[in-house]
Length: 192
Length: 232
Image 1 (tube, rainbow over the protein chains, first blue to last red):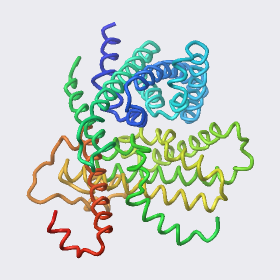
Image 2: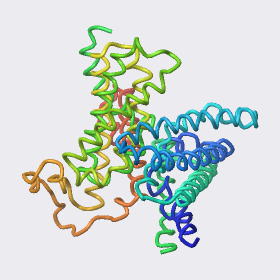
Image 3: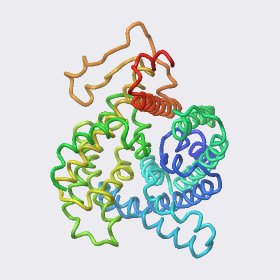
Image 4: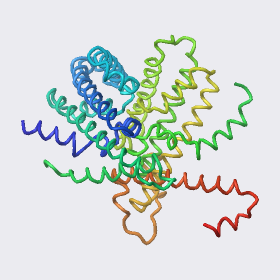
């Protein structure tokens, strides 16, 4: 139980996927200029992430490993992710039209979010148990949602600040992300 | 689509400098920031990405009439994933040591938006040769951004350049390492994750500043350049 708690904290904060491992930067910088869609996208990505990691774990241990088809891992995982994203879009459209209107454009892009594929590959690489994988991916998803909403809030403030013209937009966003990453380095060593 | 040789060369110039896809649209930023801790890592990923981009562009251009419209994206992704798997296997076989340090990011080439963007907007509409040329130009732009960031971070962060090249080019390359004279160690922060974001931000701001200065100077062509210099 203590181990699972450690995995959760480590995946969400200490080894944050965006700021420490550089996964999922495209949505992190692309969708973070306003707070509400960023948070919604963060949560949707977290759901897709946990679902795919759990399914990927199953496929790896019940299909690929017994048949010695590990070299097909990438192809199988990316197909799996596309299917889960499709499924999530259907569910959101059926249950919450409002959320679907906000996220509609960004949802298919979750397929090409490297954090989703990265978490599935890393979880398999670390040979975690099924519950370990689940906790690891939930932690990763929570970390992603946390950081993207923090950063969107930061950028809303930045958009009103007087920034030198060469730094306006992307450069100042990158430098702010660097300072945020500096803050997250403070978690290094937690739970060791 | 013919007689594109001269525009091709001028386009290469744009892609390498101001119109670099990695800087302007921030496509493919994850590998750019993650792998740019040293030149050798950057070079390995640049070579792998070039191979995957070239292979999948040619494959998609060749199959463009056979891929049905509704299954376009899944087909592109599967083709890219196949070429990425090939790149992973080749690196595992011939450069295992260096592959070990960037393994995840080689696999993540599958989700590199630059490749999918070229497939969707260009390679699926033109014959294979044009797609191959476009892929090479775009890959060189990505590689230039990756190598520049890698070189800056290696010099500032570790005070070396071209360290560890023997992992890629064999023992003969062991002597390629250059150390910055008079400096014992670099700024550690530049190699750590925050340094990646900050260095990339500073480099983009620098290139924008230079571009703005140049266009301002271009507008005042009647003024002698010295007058502009003394004013600033």
